[in-house]
Length: 317
Image 1 (spheres, rainbow, N blue to C red):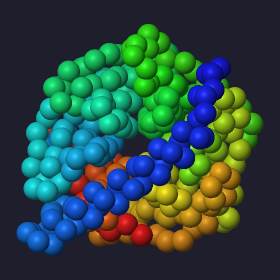
Image 2 (image 1 turned 90 degrees about the horizontal axis):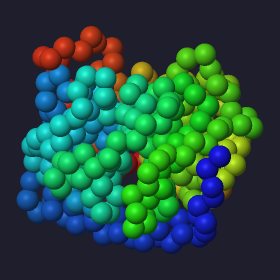
Image 3 (image 1 turned 180 degrees about the horizontal axis):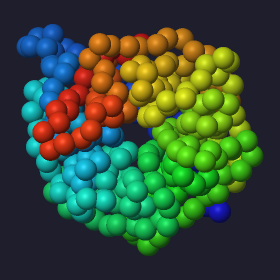
Image 4 (image 1 turned 120 degrees about the vertical axis):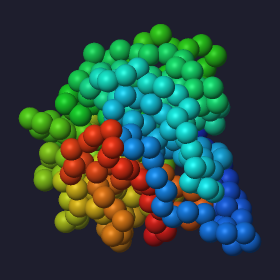
């Protein structure tokens, strides 16, 4: 069982305040730049055959995408929509599913069916380290002040990779999920986020109660069902928390359901649903300025090297 992140909630509150003020400043800057010059593209292509799933945006207006086909990382400018592959993956069977970047420019990658976690230098594209989890499908990742946390879609457990110290961790720790957690016979856990106060983790459970959200204690692994009223997340994928507003991407429904959470993340109220005719099974979302950016995974078509993929931007709620 993973150890507690000391002062997890207190540091999260401080981090949230700093990040939120910074995001407001960056958002204002980005919006002003659009107004003064020309609009940034609200839709732009990814390489044919790329098979995107995850997206992350760091301190600068560049988005990073992972490939399900071979684990490549593609970086695109939000200002122009142009980009290139900046890191080659390990090939077929070594997908990149969810990914996040920290303020030091390190990318944390969920390796899907390879059971791997990988770290990559975003500036050079170098693969820094590959970790074996012993898991079956490492799906998504969220960063906390002391760790990177990953979901496994076929096992009732999370993975914790320590971060923030001077030494590179040698191994991944496993946190079994208990309490209200219900492991389905098939794909179960998906997206992961933090509660607004940073005291716990939020994990999509596609099986429990027809699809819902679980609040997980990072010290014990005890999961409790988040009260979302009558709302369900049967196709819940990526989660994005901005303040107390939680965006839950419902991929097969071509929609984003929006909830207002209480501080501890035990309860949420559905306040909006975002849809767009350009959605073609979006999977995850990242924010820049007043926009949400989502890759279209196109899971409804058989992928080929010629299959077209793109990214769309919509306004935040």
